[in-house]
Image 1 (cartoon, rainbow, N blue to C red):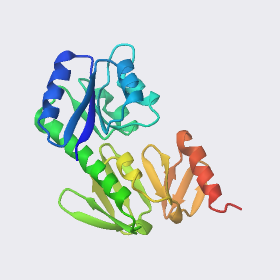
Image 2: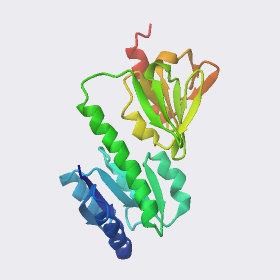
Image 3: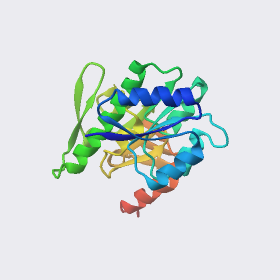
Image 4: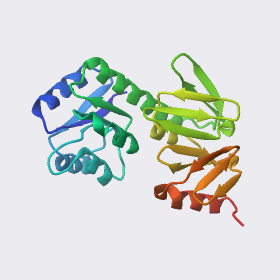
Length: 235
């Protein structure tokens, strides 16, 4: 299966380099190349892509502005010369962050990460059986988790931490990447936290207590959380 990829960068050399890199990866198909944010938004209104290679600092409209304008966001990899945007990039749930000049090896690592996530999505959509578990890759192992045992998932830059009553396991996956594969009892309460509602012991003002841990509820996710809480027979 080939994945459609769109390149957005205001620098011609960067567009040429990334296009060359795309041509070297058999699983990718170049859907288009845009030189600014407005052009990218116009393209995405008419076309669907799987992966977005997006520069951040561009005239008139930044890459962050582009993402904020999109309702249905492709899996996004930021490409920029400015490392200071890394934290903000992860706040926007991009799957990876490449700093120019980008080597092919680092580009390929980011693409492999994106393709792996997209492949998992396809399998999930095609599977009719509802599984009660999932597997997650760590640096050295593949670990099995029951959905029911997971209390919370915490984002730590490009990693996530799966938290259960008995263990904490790190994996090189984005929080958004795993969020789309989780069943309905999971809800995002903060840009850095997803919790399993089955494990909630108390809701205290702007925090959720699970076991001995308090997890913050941010303003951006508060309404969604309390709506879901109300749907769970809140008396």
